[in-house]
Amino acid sequence: MSKKTNKFSAEDFGGNTETPKENNFYFGKENYKWMLIGLACIVLGFLLMMGSDANTVNGKFDPNSWNEDIFSIRRIRIAPLFVVIGFAIEVYAILKRK
Image (cartoon, rainbow, N blue to C red; front, side):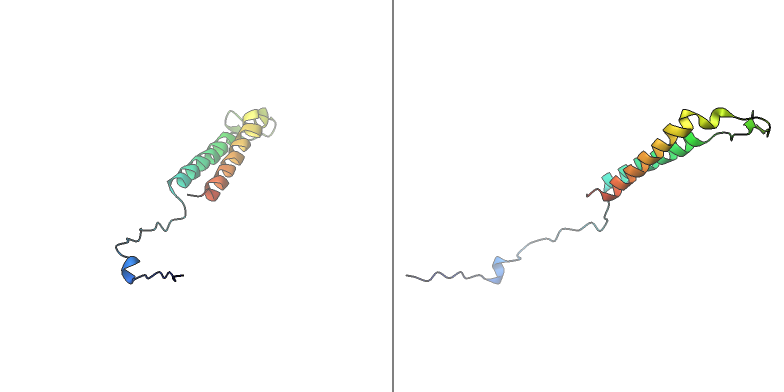
């Protein structure tokens, strides 16, 4: 039996290899796009919550009146839903890999 030997030289390894330039950022373009979408949802939610308070009628404070608009579907259901969805999108954007 003949003994098989592998002979390697330094020229066989690491010849003209270029090291790729690494991106040191953790987030990519896709992450930032999702972060902006989440931020827009949060801002939209807070804008939908805005309005007059319970004792404001026609832009003036009146302690003897009650404004039912504070219980509108927009302020109670839709606006908080947009805020929660926005925060969920933010979590997704942070945890998403490049």
